[in-house]
Length: 344
Ligand code: CP3
Image 1 (cartoon, rainbow, N blue to C red):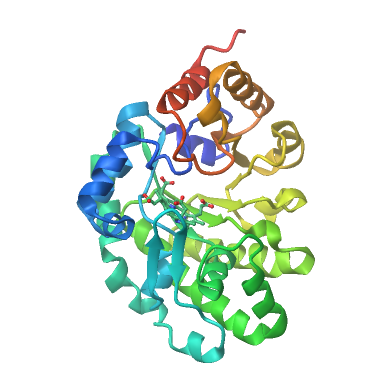
Image 2: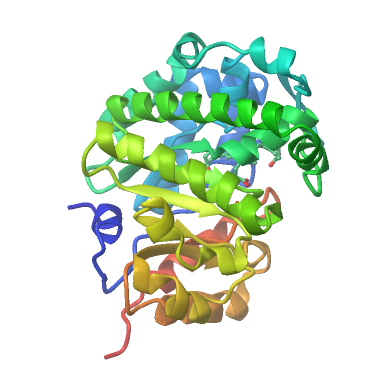
């Protein structure tokens, strides 16, 4: 079995499998060349041949144990009818949803596939093009994180507009969350049908949900999405990433049914080993900045995280995405260090 699938099944491996969030990205010259060929970022996402190519680039260069579909979490809002564009150097922009009329105007969950069909084609391409030992990960944004962009129309430092809608007009906010959740299930189901071997739910802004809100808007939607996907695809492993959940990571496996919980770099690997890993596979959590700075600090950190999490199932990864200013040589050094023979 592929090493990533073995770790997801709960196996403790002598060398953990490794992949990297945003492994296909601007730090790679070959990515920048293919993106230039595609035109803009969204054209690259919807061009199945070129999206397949950029997904394969980090696999060829580094031999990662998993490939992640090249797409974006904001394609779901677009498929639901939102306008979406990217402003160079700034990030995504979307038309905003602030009232019930906005929610009512969204397309239904079964009408998203027309827009998303090229993404399913990319998954099919990858499932035949990847090396036999490389696992294929599909993904979507979790409802809360996607909602933060749909309400604000852009990324925000504190997710203020989504919190305001939730607190001022909960029925409208809940209706929006329900629409996203339903679409996310259909989208991930189609990725699995096309060949994704596991799927990851990115809840990048879960850390701003506190108390009961964390239960209602991070835990509960993930639990329902995972239950429905596993009902449709028995045995499908799921990775959840409630980023910056802190204490919320404790119990997240059990509360959501996730097979693997990905952790950011605000928690130590030692704390994760004691408090999260006993419940199942964990993924993480090297600070992305080591991909910029490299050197002995990178080597020491890779060994520390590997060793701290060596007592249970672990998938090595960064705590968040690799940044455009990273040096590809540091990525190679991370992998080489991880896979070095551990002295007996
Ligand atoms: O990890 C991978 O290699 C797979 C592809 C992937 C992308 N985005 C490609 C991308 C994945 C899994 C995502 C997830 C995503 N997208 C998240 C969740 C993970 C996280 O980072 O917290 C979020 C919040 C988004 C939304 C998004 N997409 C933003 C805010 C931005 C702009 C910021 C930036 O880095 O430029 C994007 C753009 C984006 N998505 C790029 C890539 C490679 C850069 C676009 C470019 O080439 O110009």
